[in-house]
Amino acid sequence: MPELPEVETVCRGLRSLLVGNTFKHVKKFRPNLRIPFPENFEALLEGRSIKKIERRAKYIQIFLDSKQVLLIHLGMSGRLLMQDNKQFNQEAPHTHDHVIFHLSSGDWVRYRDPRRFGLMDLCHEDVLTSHRLFRHLGPEPLESLFDAERLSRALKGKKTSIKVALLDQRLVVGIGNIYVNEALFRSGISPLRNAGSLSRVEVATLLPILKEILEEAISAGGSTLRDHIQPNGKLGYFQYKFKIYGRENKACLNCGNAHLVKRIVQVGRSTFYCLNCQV
Image 1 (cartoon, one colour):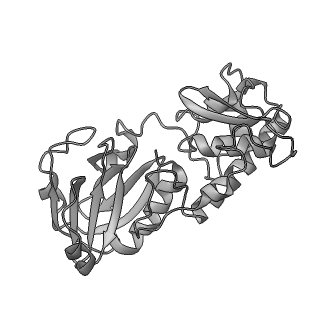
Image 2: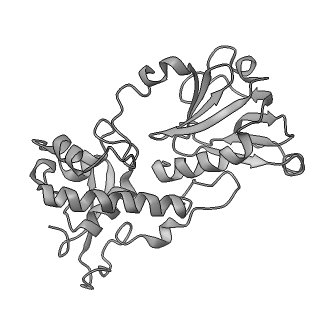
Image 3: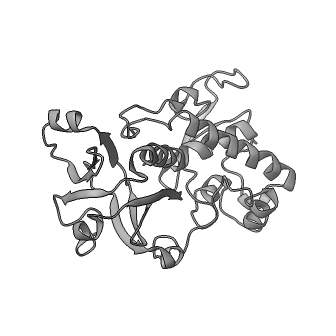
């Protein structure tokens, strides 16, 4: 599933094409994705100009001049592919293209989603923060107000593991499994530690590293392990910078000891950690 860096990469790619443009024509090819499309979905978008594009957690928010916001979640395998008129006409219709957006510039955006776990919805911008998709969400990890003191307060008394806590969208949004693995490794913190056991010093060490990793991943276009592709068709390449993720039974890149990197499963997600370096 695309996490914060992948979704942020998609948002940045879309801004250059969509902002200031108008949805000339919208066509959906099925009644639903993970949830049904809003009633009159196409009619509500056609003729509307695009003011700005933002990200909240793992959601893309496209603000329109009608004060409606198009909400998009890419699910497990969703992609938004930008094409000029020549590219669009050269590509045959794809089985998994579920929505096509034609822009006033003549360019096109295809929403392609083989697993159909993504979603699209519309919401008035005045009630966006109270929308059912957002009202339970915690702070953004990259915002300046999310500091070590705030994270320490959020972790205080928690009996769950630090790995699981950092994946809790109520505590902090969008970090994702890969990036939690990497941050805990660079911080020397075991993913098995109770979240509430971390000292203020450890939290003050962990948080800047976590933010640094997310920024690095965004700069690298995210991580392409299976489905993530940037809107321009390029792959992300942060996967080539992994220090711990996917390295089960290999030598630790920090201490050099062979076969000390182990894999376990926490809340259904793979956790990789070094038995020597993370305590």
